[in-house]
Image 1 (cartoon, helix red, strand yellow):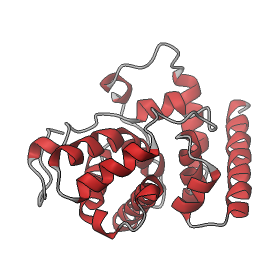
Image 2: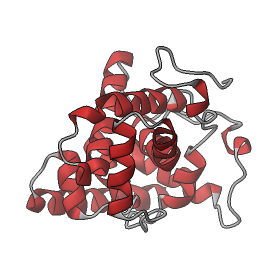
Image 3: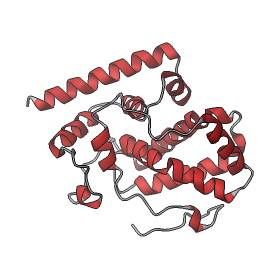
Length: 220
């Protein structure tokens, strides 16, 4: 898909990076570790300052905010909808909604939880509009050719994991995606709107279901 400026857009086209070709590769390489490490750290103070500046209309801050979160949003979107064809569109919709909704964010320290909740809601709306009965569709044959795989990438492992994820509910995949992104239990609580005790139980059960589905595929 050729790079394009979303329309209508409150910002110049230059604000938006080129479309993400295939974040599925990143998901495949990182997904086996559902406890995954947090991605590149940004201090809470820096994030709060960036969010405040973006809300005030600072285009440079808006660009930095988009660049800081685009890949993470795209990976989260892929985990939930499973279609490489729709990642760019849904991700850009989320980014536009993020910028347009910043004035409604009451607590800037909770920006990331708010953003992931925004992304999850966008994915659910997308799936409902498309009336998909399955959350994952097979990847295109040339998918792994779009982005170079990391040296330790194991296509057999990634394929087995992808099929195991297909068996999980949207809620299970959402909480595993947050865990893989390094979210704390408290952050998951804010993103999913559940109690802390419920989050711990949900995460444990989601991991157990993923392992069970994965091992059943491994022994088929």
